[in-house]
Image 1 (cartoon, rainbow, N blue to C red):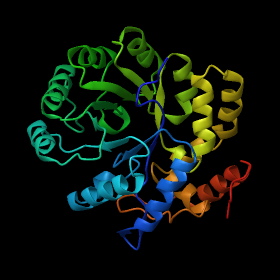
Image 2: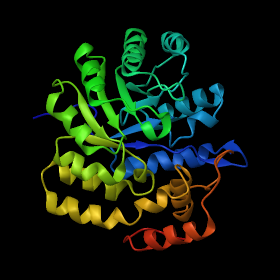
Image 3: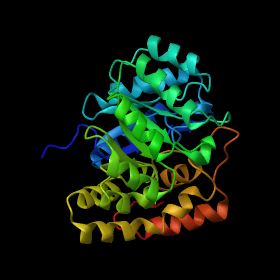
Image 4: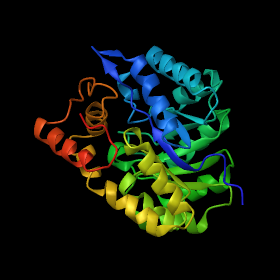
Length: 299
C-alpha cells in the first residue's frame, strides 16, 4: 500500500543565529545534513525554529531560503502561527505566497484559552481561507489549551483540508482515541520524540521531530523500522536515543537541540532573548550522552 505524501519523519528545523542574525550558511548546512540523514519532510518556522522571535520579513526570508535549498527534494510544511486573533490569521492565509510549500501547520490559539467550540470555529475559519492542507498542532504545554480528541475528530470529519494532527499533548490515550475514530484521509503524528515509537505501534504514521535536527539518520531509521513492523530494530534504536531526549528539554526547546547542534559542529547554540542557551553542566551532560552514539563527530 502506498504511503501518504506526508509520513515518516518530519524535522522541525532550527533557525541558526550568528551574532544575532540568521546564519544562512549554517541553515543550508543543516538542511543538507537532515536530507542526507533520511528525513521524509521538512517543517520550517515551527516552535523549534523560533518563529515567534523572528520578524515577519525574517520568516519570509527563512521560508524562501528553505524552499530554494530543498529544491523540491522533500515536501515542506510551513509553520503558520500568526495571531490569536482569528480574522488576522485568516487574512494572512488569503494573502500569503505559499509557492513551494506543500502544507501549513498551525497551533491552536494561545493565552486566550478558548473553549473547544472556539477552537473548532478557529480552525474551520482557517480551512475556509487556506489554499493548502492544514496540520493541526496540539501543544497544550505552550498554548494552555488542549485540543481534545473529540475536537480533532470533529475537524477531521468536517473538512478534508485537515490532513493530520501533530499530537504534542503527551496523552497516549487521547492520541489512541483519534486513531480509532479518524477518517481515512487524516493522520496522527507524534509531537513528542520520546513517545514516537509507542504512538506508531498504535497506528500513528509519523512524527515532527526535534532530535532529527541532530540525529536524522538514527531517528529516521527508528521511525522507518517501527512503521515497517520491525519492532526489534525500532526498540534498539529507540533505546540508543532514550537518554539523550531529556537533555534536549531540560533548559527548554530549542535551547537543548541547539546545544546538540553546536556539539556536533553544525551551528552555534545562540538563541534570541527571552530564550537563553543551556546551562553549562547540562551542556556537558548532553555532550557525554551524544558521545555514546556511534559515528557522531562530538567535538
